[in-house]
Amino acid sequence: MKQTLIAERVFDGEHFHHNQAITIEDGRIVSFDRASDVEPILLAGTLVPGFIDVQVNGGGGALFNDAPSVEKIKTIGQAHARFGTTGFLPTLITDEIEVMRAAADAVAEALALNTPGVLGIHFEGPHLSVPKKGVHPANYIRRISDEELAVFARNDLGTKVVTLAPENVAPEVIHALVECGVRVCLGHSNADYDTVIKALEAGATGFTHLFNAMSPMDSRAPGMVGAALESQDAWCGLIVDGHHVHPASAKVAIAAKPRGKVMLVTDAMPPVGMDDNASFELFGTQVVRRGDRLNAVTGELAGCVLDMIGAVNNSVSMLGVAHEEALRMAARYPAEFIGHRQRGVFTIGARADMVLLGSDNQVARTYIDGQLVYQA
Image (cartoon, rainbow, N blue to C red; front, side, top):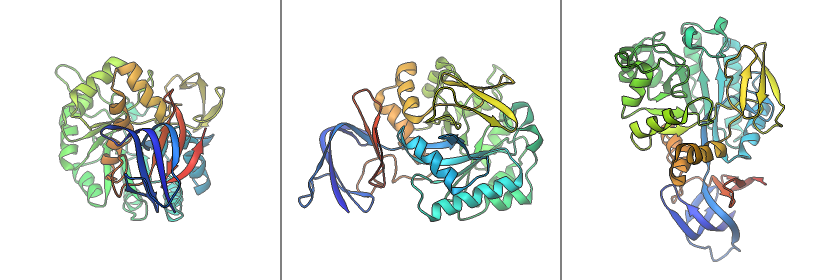
């Protein structure tokens, strides 16, 4: 079905345009002219490319680790669509191999069913560093084996991201993962600078939630943070919620990295899209929401209740990032990281994944493949 949308303002991923028409057919943008054979839909607000979140543990009360299924993935996707996310990687944190296989099966089925928003899967662990585990269960952290490699090598999972600690995974194994289509991110790691550099040389291309759960930068020991900031080629995910990273540190990262190499992530947990008193259990530990912060009863930060439009607006208000750059950090840059260059921008042939923002910069509508999936 062909349709034409005309918005007061349109951000195409690079520039703003006023009273711009976008004509969509079969889920893709086919023209920036008004189609003569359809009645246009007039939109009050700003139409922007849909947000892409490469680290989504849960939402809408659902946790991906908790009995992974297509229905659970749908629930998570619907919860995040309310906040402008049109593409996401369901993220499985450190768990036993049976749960990893179940998660892979669920994502493969979701992709086969064209479940809205699902782009692939992110395995955050289990090959991490115990000293930097955060809330990941230590009893499931382990060396990589043929069992995990078989899961990572599957060719029915769409975009595959694996977060690992390079001190526990040899460069030749990282190279092998890259060769079978995995985007390797480094994180939850106590690695020294030289070990990180070897992992990058082996093919790692990203850093998971920069600054959090990784060896810090010191004057004579740059650590993982120093290597991440130095790298001109690797992408860094950044949690901008005011709790995980001090605004000054986030500003330094954005200033140090080349344009396009810092992307917003939520690290979202089940309470996203739920009421303020929502709590949940993570591997037997109670996690409690206090406002916009999640803490395990043991004290650690336990993921986020951050959503993507919140991350965009926080980047503007807390970090002084220009609105258009914050929008790129939420859409275009993560799309480039995962190799989906037909997303995150409005160009001819691009996916019609779009978000309408109201005058308050909150989400009024979300479209995936040109279909309205959320309206405030």
